[in-house]
Every structure is written in C-alpha cells, then in structure tokens.
Length: 126
View 1 (cartoon, one colour):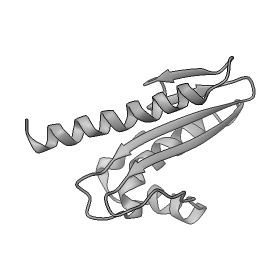
View 2: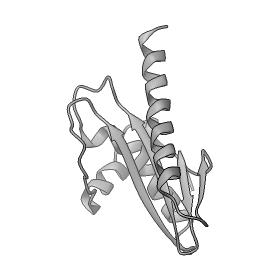
View 3: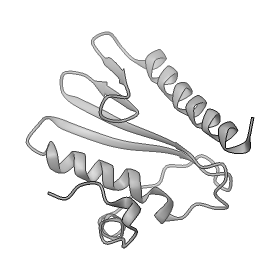
C-alpha cells in the first residue's frame, strides 16, 4: 500500500475515533450522524455541532491556509443556516508539529480564507 493510501486510512481512523468518542460521551436524546452535512453532526434540542476532522500527516507545519477549505465550508453552512437554531462549528485537525491545543479562529482569519485566490477553494457561486 502506498503512502497516500496510508495517510487516507489514518484520516479515516482519526475521524472514526472522534466519532466514537462523541458517541461514548453523549447523553440520551442526542443524535450523532456521520457524513451528513459535515464529517460528524451532533444534534440535540437546543443546538447542533458540525464537526470536520482533518489529518495532515504530510504537512510540515500548521499554517492557517491549510485549514482554509474547512473554514470556507463552515462559513457557507453558516450563511445557508443563519435563520436556524444555534449551530456550533468545530474543526479537529492533526498536524505533526502541533501538540493538541485549542485554537480560536477570528474574523480576520476568516476574511483571509474568503479572499484567498486559490481556485481549488471555490465552493459555490451564488
């Protein structure tokens, strides 16, 4: 099996472990859905969580541009669902140079993703 296949399998494993963790810690009445809107969607009466899992084993180091695509996907979802119940967006990303930590993304960083000139990041036209 080639390296890229190994990294893909590690990515699926990363997503599976996060999903399994959410199932184990959930209470009754919480729905956990895989691969609906995001990698993992968690629903309860008052809110939803939409979770993306990214495994960047080959990335030399974390940079903001490495997470532009999931940021743009979250912003698109937010724009399309702004009239609905509270939706919380979470990105779980593995980078070999980072120890687990919580990183908040601010408005300026979201604007950098929005104004990126990388045409691979174009998600929608309307």
